[in-house]
Length: 331
Image 1 (cartoon, helix red, strand yellow):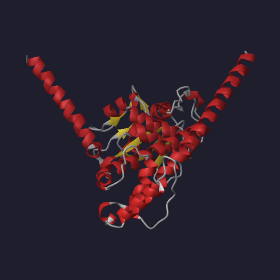
Image 2: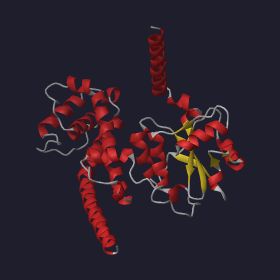
Image 3: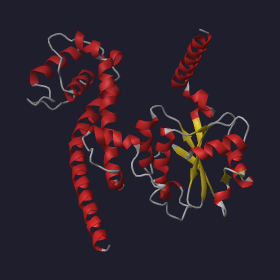
Image 4: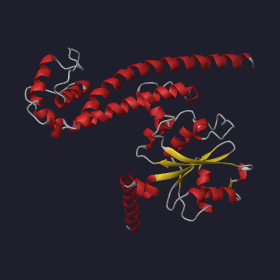
C-alpha cells in the first residue's frame, strides 16, 4: 500500500511538473524564455541565444530556413575555434578551461543550455557549473538541424564543411508537413535547398489559413445575428469576403457563382446590414482586411507549391537513380 501511495504521489508530481512547463515555459527556461544554444562545428563551437517558442517541433525548422528575415529566432552569436576540439569536452577529462570560459561568459543565471549530443549534456552538467541544466530532446535536434543545414549563414566564420553524417537532412517538422500532403516517398537523402524552401512555403500557407480560420470562428456569433443569410458550409474565402464587406461596405468586391465568391444578392444583403450597425465596435477592421487579402493568396499558392514540389521530388529521384547507376558501373 505504501509503495502504491508513493507511486501515485510521484505520478502527481510529474503531471504537475508537465502542466507547469506547458503553462510557464519561460519561467522554467530562465532568462525570459531565451535559451543558450551550443552548436558544434567542424573546427569549434558557436553559441547563440534562441527565443523559445511553444510547439517547437512544428515551427523551429521553418523559422531557421527563412534566411535573412528580420524575425530570425537566433541572435547574438559567438564563435570560437579550437585547436584541439576533441579535448574541449571529454568523458574522461571533463571540459577544457577555454570551453568552460566560453560557456560561463554567455550563460545567464538559471538559463538553460541546449546541446546537440547526449554526451555533452552529461559532461557539462557534471563538470561545468553547479546547477546547470542542459536541454537535449527532439525540439533541440530540430534547432540543430536548422543551424547545421544553414551553417554558412549562421556561422560564416566556419570555413570547413560538415560531413554528410553531421548534416541532418530531414527535420521532424519538415517531415510532418511533407507527410500531411502525401509526400511519403521523399527520403532524407533527397532533401535539398529547393525542397526545403517549397516545403516551408506549404507550411506558411497552412499557418496563414489556420490563423484566419481561428479568427473567423471567434466571430461566429456575429454571423448568426445576420438575418436572411445561412453561413453554414461557406468556403473560408467567402467568409473572409463577407467580413470585409461588413467592415468596408462602400468598397467593391468580386462576385460570382464560384463557391469562394459572394453572389450579387448576398453582397447587397450584407451591405444593407453593415450600414445599420457599427462594425468597428464588434469587428477588428484590420484583421478582417488581412483575412480577405491573405486567405485567397494562401489558397492560390498552395496548389502551385504542391505542383513544384512534385516536380522537384521526381527530379531528385531520377538524379539519385542516375548516381546509383554510375556508382555501380565504376565498381
